[in-house]
Length: 614
Image (cartoon, rainbow, N blue to C red; front, side, top):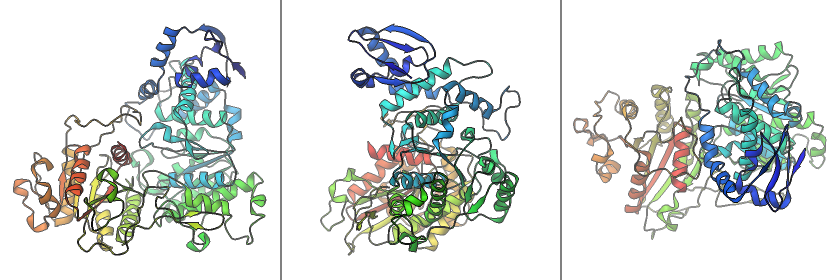
């Protein structure tokens, strides 16, 4: 460790590889005041910084510059199932070399890692684990993906997203250490690999007691599988997703997910379909892994406490998180100490209950009231001058996750009262009007008899998804519970997969026109589901040509496809236009309650959250 000090004349002694990290000038005043411990300084060079060079550095190493640098790591190659056989090193060999360059190989084992793979529920399980162990008194690090609004979301320290200053410091330090060692055989790591390395560097430097890592895709060949010494591993519910990479059977998918198992390291999974469970058990047997099936959490064990992440499927994820945390505590010798104040051995410690009731994960079963309509939108009264606009956000995009999303949405909209989620306290349950996972506002028990509720689907999905599978399941589950959709709106994506943007970047009002062929295909599938037959779609007809009142209130009998008028759906040229339409509709109709389910893509959910935040 070398101490970097700043003298009055702004001259300093820095390493060549880390100098730009220190020039994250939003941190300069703090650095000048109290100095900074900086590791991994291989060569020393003296740099004199005058006022003009300070200004240049400030413009060169801002957060936006970091986003540009990250964007340069996005590969244009199509995802493939097999590794690149022409490369000198495999992905994981390169990851190991990157770890060596960053000088953190020995310290990674000290992170006491919980490693979690699976098809659905990975993020929720990891979030539960982090909250439980943080509430148990440990300093935590959490790495998840993808981010919804800002890349900093992927890195949490003690439950909080890292600050911009922290991000810049660690980002430029890692960037330049790796950049200095680039060769033809060892190029800069692609985006997700770099972010994984950055997460490891952050948690090592911040000396966390436990680090929880969510696998990106698969497991066996995932970048996070550079982790060789986890304390415990978890496999969440398995299903069909990323089949172009992982294979088209549950057995093949399970093989990839079980790739995170390490010899003799404890592992837990949830109840799986037989085809998947057989593979998991076989892989565990080969590696002498003590694999156990974690039972779903029960409401009885919650003892009146409500999970902060909504949906019955979260009981499965919470049960897995509890098993992972117990195993981690046992392996680190902390479990008995945590239990000493608990009366019954089979009860959950208070710290576990606090964690389960406060864990937060955006974009999964999240409810957001749109406050742009005014204060009266919070509590519906006879005197309200605006209608209500409520967004129900869930990034479901696989058949299994869409089932869970549909059940959650159906359950929550069927309640006459939007009940607040309680938070756990050592002495009592405290009712809050705003939950940690989205605002849930209290309503009057007696609904206004004049209120007209309209459930609307706001949807988009990537073209690798099959709408013929996921949309019918969504419709059937909601319809069977009396939660039919009045309308469906299909929009193109705003987020671009070729650029990493800042969370502070505004979404432009006037978005360039896009090819809407995919959105019209989604609409065609939807109309077929609703009408039971194919209906011709006029690709030149978008919502711009349909009066808002007609679209909202017309029923199936008003369908006139020959003029591009569909009773059940519409295509909007852009997401901002769709959100503006929904806001204007609620604003102009005081008796209207619009309940909008946003799903099909985490990118869509993130874009909606960004628009609502603006």
